[in-house]
Image (tube, rainbow, N blue to C red; front, top):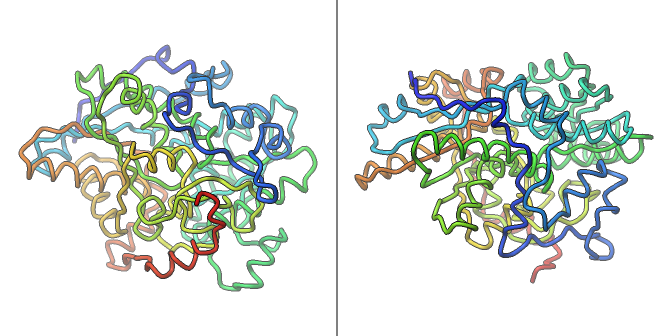
Length: 454
């Protein structure tokens, strides 16, 4: 088991979030109104999101945005999180690479999601909101927001993707323990859900569907706001506490990563660890490589199209510039439920389009093989989502071995997998499979896009 940990003190918790847009050579294109194609302004988002989050969403100028003291005080419950040198994994791979991971699994809910959940719940409460709605894939975001909502006295309804609702009952139990209402999506409680069930009676759901239902409920409920766990700019912003801490910790370790890796669904944990290090490339001329590791069954960054698309299945959201498989894309029922989203956030998509970050796709069986090796060498059972980052880190470490070069690799362990043991049971029983999306399926879905960027 590994022993090298690099720990910060409470005073080292960042006092501001880092807004990478201010430093980007090419800013992300704005979200646009699907009817008029006019850029969305902050006030256009006020009916749906907290005002502060809406303002953060369209802030293209301020590199740092102050963290409210009440939010920072709650961060102190578990932050700063450890940076760990994965010496056990290095030995298992017999690699000259130095592998580090930022351990976000130590939060009360077991993942990085609490970084933004607390911030968004705080802003809703400060605005006088009483009810909030959201979606969740694997349940990590729903669990985090449930805890945050309870702290601030907000009523929360969570639309949980149906396949995860069934595969991960204990995540549902966590949300209910904190007092949230959890609804399997698609459901009969919304117009969007009823239409999808009518058209596809056996549909197991997607994040796009769950977003549609949560948005619809928020817009039809008095004094209610919608709260999102990934994709949007303000969510990525809140997560940058991860990378800012990791920068200090890598300096403590006396090294700087050659490669920074995180799993990728909508982009929250990737943004969180990558953007503060990307600033070194943009402002200091560093040459750090960034890898977003997504599932082969939902390969938007590696095989999707860079175009405007809806963030949800029903088309309730503004159009977002993103790498997308099409908002009607139906992902395979992999156990990494948090990565089953059709598109990438606008910031990450622009960075990918400009060649400032890379992406790889990881088959499901490779991710579980990597997760098992990591658990046996480091003692932590990772979430299926995080396992994609581990698999990518292992690829990089083995390549360093082939080349005979020392390489410093940093990845984000975005969450633990102690509530995902059903997935591990199926893996050990040889009851899991890889899923590959055909070119024809991707082409059919992306053919429906408006092609605004052409």
